[in-house]
Length: 501
Length: 68
Image 1 (cartoon, each protein chain N blue to C red):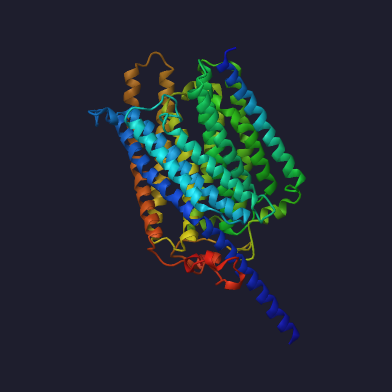
Image 2 (cartoon, rainbow over the protein chains, first blue to last red):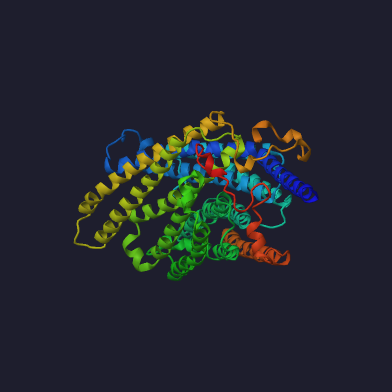
């Protein structure tokens, strides 16, 4: 009898613990819901804008007389506007949504004054709108990754200042004493990006560095915005989502920490490999080649870790959309990074530099890796913020297969076409017009890939709008919201509505 | 050296010192505050009573059986 009573108490205790933890997590999610969903929604708007610009630019390369009547829609402007919309719109805003939500959850701290972050989001979007419209109207600068006309950067700087300060504020209010590896990545990103952006703006536009220093600063920024802003948050997201979804801690936490610090040490060297063969001091591009090779350390650390964590759980890829997108992204990270290290070798660059091969590599990185992980994050995060499940699993499948097949075609087509393009460009006996004609089918395959990817983005947008609008069943039954939390255990009942549970 | 060159030089050297120094300080803090003392506990810190180790937390919306 006594044993039964004791057991009942234990069960009650653990049920209470469970309810308490669920309530705490729900309160944290509720506190950051507004800004995170705002960043996520505006990211998706820019994803659509960027997709349309991308399609237009892609089609123009194999059908050059399309829409040539207006200077606004010429290839040069449309491609720049595409990069601006995707880099600073979709990727950056999705990155901010990802880092805010995960920083709150991992610190186990509520977000205070969320309206300030909404202000940051509005500022960023104003800057972004000015930048894209400005580029289309012909105000672009000639600096890749920094094409935004002079009136846009102040908005980005103000917004990123608020975002970084608020992320640190959440971190300082943390209740969880351990700093998880994802938090290291996030803290790195919010510290590095403002620095990169300010120094690049200062050295290229405000107080002009002259001569070869300009492209050096340009590619120091251009590569680091990928390596120290998108990459850390995306890798950190995979480090949170994969263990969390399958319910198994990372295979080697030690390796994950090594991965973070070696990324911090080596990634910022790599930018000069964009200028191999260019008019810069030879030691600079050699140092970058070394740095790019050293990146194999963090990349293999992440690859081994994610693979070993997933081992025995791969069957779950059939069931969880968040996991499937995230694991796809993590695999693409390994592929693109190993490829990138070897691409930085001078012999390799001799063929592939300034060809479509580089474009394929870039898209495997920003799409196959970063974008796919951000999709995975959205599939996991949004239902937990809105309290609604996704309305249609068919649309999720459409999204996944369009995106996955799309990027595969994109990568395969331009890699093969680009490689032979490079080989022929190195051969003085091949007429240039022949090379241009040779690349046409590959460029056409890119338009097909782009159409598929855009179709996937439309499916994703429909899902997101339906979810936020409250279509789809109320979220229930999942472990996150397993137990109805008793109101006594809440830190403040006003923080929790029925939709959070 | 012109004023502009000095400003650029100061930016480059200044940010190298500032950001290299920040990384060293962060690493030092992490060691001192015991962040690297117990990797096992660190890996488990994202799990809690409501989302324990061994329980999957996600599935396709129409496949509730996966969520246990």
